[in-house]
Image (cartoon, rainbow, N blue to C red):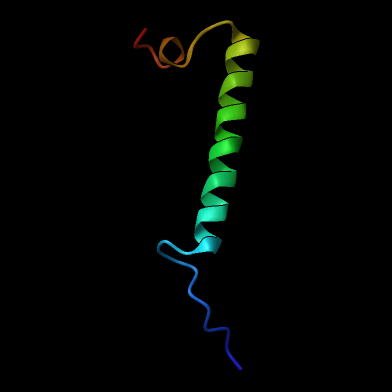
Length: 47
């Protein structure tokens, strides 16, 4: 029997992973700023 659960759109599964990836991105961005001493805009040449 095939798995017929929907994993796209505004469903709990997709929203859970979206939240997890957003939290990881925030922590990685914060760690990069701490390690380099530059903000994200300065790192990409806009600041």
